[in-house]
Length: 171
Image (cartoon, rainbow, N blue to C red):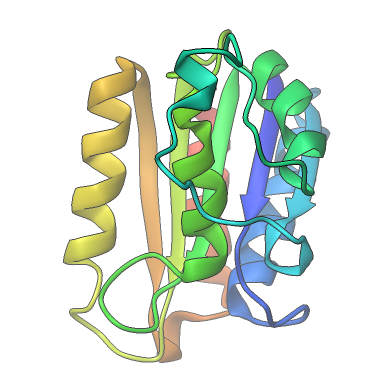
């Protein structure tokens, strides 16, 4: 399968980046084509709700930033993995911008499955992010292969790696 991982942590060697990398390695080892994009270090603005994409733009966004690199990847992705730190009860701002900008596509064209990887230093802070994720994939009508969360004592552990491997096995 063609897998796109959007990694939304500004910490290049942080816990979320580790989770995304573990998913990438496992999926490639299983024979999948994987593209991992560090969206936290891209220049991607939020949606302006201008509706250009649904009018004059015929599906193209009026904003010309690093999101232009993601649109072809999103169009071909069969699996989308969102990897995000949870700073204050929801997905990080760095991953919110690309998620919101998918609006012009309505839904990535070939998308069939998704997964969520989320990390935080605190327990019991994932409900908002999980609710948003589930709402998005419900709207898209795609299969959820699972959610892996890792609080401070679960980060970069063999147990968390095993949970990530279980997600890849569902592809």
